[in-house]
Length: 188
Image (tube, one colour):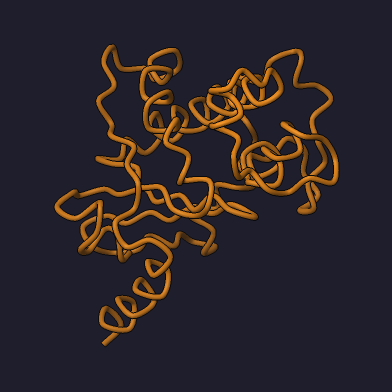
């Protein structure tokens, strides 16, 4: 809500905000109102299955929610770190630098990440068609997301041209608490 009200998504009618850190989550704001849905699960993006699964992605990883193949099991920070450095690693710091220096494992992990993230965003664009996608959380600090993902969207978005911007949040780590404050204002 913070980013939709006066942050990176301000001035857009439909804002889809994604938090990518230790876990994942998302939120939908339309005309300044948070969309919760009938069961208050609208935007539960982390537990949406990875779309357009490839053969090499089987078997699908089991998620703590009980389902298999959830986005969180591919796209949160610890999963990217595990893909890069193996089980037991949780930190993605330095992955872009390692890839730029020719680290094959970092290059492969980032390639897979960008492909999967673009598929997840394309699915969201196909069913919600947001005016903008705003990213937050630690993984949103990867510059390569903003360079590499937009050109990949066309493979799965059903419109001939996809111009949905994917942008970094404006308010950083304060965005969540700012959004809570905005909810207080909206409730009054």
